[in-house]
Amino acid sequence: MAESESRNAVYSEAMQWYENNWDPNCSLGDWWKLLAESGWAFPSWPTGFGGRGLKGKEAKAAKEAQRDAEAYGPPNGVATFLVAPTLMHYGTPEQQQRYMPGIVSGRDTWCQLFSEPGSGSDMAGLATKAERDGDEWIITGQKVWNSGAQFAKYGILIARTDPHLPKHKGITYFLIDMQQEGVEVRPLREMTGVAAFNEVFLSEARVSETDRLGDLGEGWRVAMTTLSHERDPENPGMGDTPAFGEVDLALPVHEHAAIQANKVDGFSLALSGGVSKILNEIIVETGKEENPIIRQELMGLLAMRRNSKWSGQRAVASVKAGGQPGPEVSTLKLLSSEMGRQIRDIGLNALGAEGMLTGSHASHNGLFHAYSMFTPAMSIAGGTDEVQKNIIGERVLGLPREPGEQQQRETNWSELPHS
Ligand SMILES: Cc1cc2nc3c(=O)[nH]c(=O)nc-3n(C[C@H](O)[C@H](O)[C@H](O)COP(=O)(O)OP(=O)(O)OC[C@H]3O[C@@H](n4cnc5c(N)ncnc54)[C@H](O)[C@@H]3O)c2cc1C
Image (tube, rainbow, N blue to C red):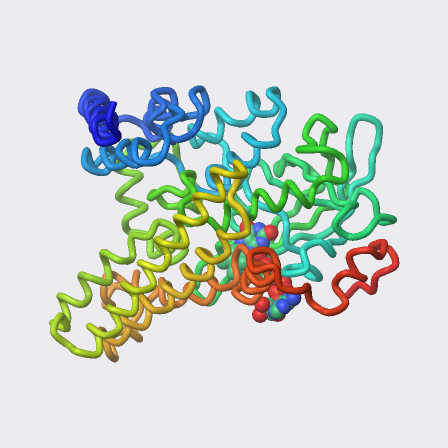
């Protein structure tokens, strides 16, 4: 079958399914379960894990059908865009069977426990320790900036299992139950006014040996897989429904959607990509379509989008070659934070003084203001812009590593200075 025919066939089949099944009065939990069981939730994922194993244009056609049918999309968040792809790559069949159904149906929310007060960019320097105790591991340490941890049932955690190895080698990756004694979550309020992320204190928390993801001491490699998915704007687990916050699965979908639509959440807007529509509306509402400065800035944005598409094709090629996104996704991450700033500047220029307003008197109920407050975070979350430039320099272009880094890489973690 020609490519366009198979694409159209997928679109028609998906559309037919949505026409037969989409019901805004259905409870959110039942809808997400049905969507996952049908395989239309995450069309490019394997059958049985919320998908149908569709590739490229066919998977895109299935998503288009969902949007055209105006059906509410699948769950979205750390669980779908970070945990699921890592679990599908490194998880044992038992781990996948245990955790994937709760992820694709939105039943279980997850958080990412990577960053620490003394190790953000230098994540391999982390100090949280995991000590073996029979069939379990005892975890002690502190994590920080953990988005959605206050609502999470589980977490993906990296911890030091051997301090007497070089820093990248003594790390292991675990799946941790967040709702146990020994895990304390303290929300942190950001300048957006929202407490999206948290500090997490781990005081002899326990993880079963069966919840180790990947081999002992291989945590750095597993974490790099998670981060490459985080930096990939084409990640199929990154959906268009709000990503963080507590959801009530018993609510009818239309009620849940109305609550989400009224939330002023710059974080979710940045993740969903829905801000372009708002930017267009602002330009029209403020009568700036013909303004030469705005038009010039829009051309700059268009050029970045084209560039991002080109870089995206290279990143997709690297996925095809290696099965997982390669370091090339750092170009996409860098461009997406730059585009975020450009969108913010165009919108604020169009709004003029009104751009300073927040709350119900502001444009779009303050949603664009919230987005503009969130944009600096886009250059930090998932690895800062500077770190992406280092990755591109060293791992894509093959430039020499930073001075002194090789020696640090070869020294045992216990002998390195710690802040
Ligand atoms: C909105 C948001 C959500 C987040 N969610 C999570 C989450 O869910 N889970 C989680 O684990 N973490 C999360 N993070 C944390 C994020 O990954 C870290 O903030 C990030 O990796 C930077 O680490 P840091 O804050 O410790 O800054 P630092 O590493 O201390 O960096 C400070 C400055 O130094 C620069 N710098 C550091 N090293 C170098 C270098 N080698 N070369 C050049 N410049 C350098 C940095 O670019 C930065 O400008 C989140 C962050 C944000 C903003």
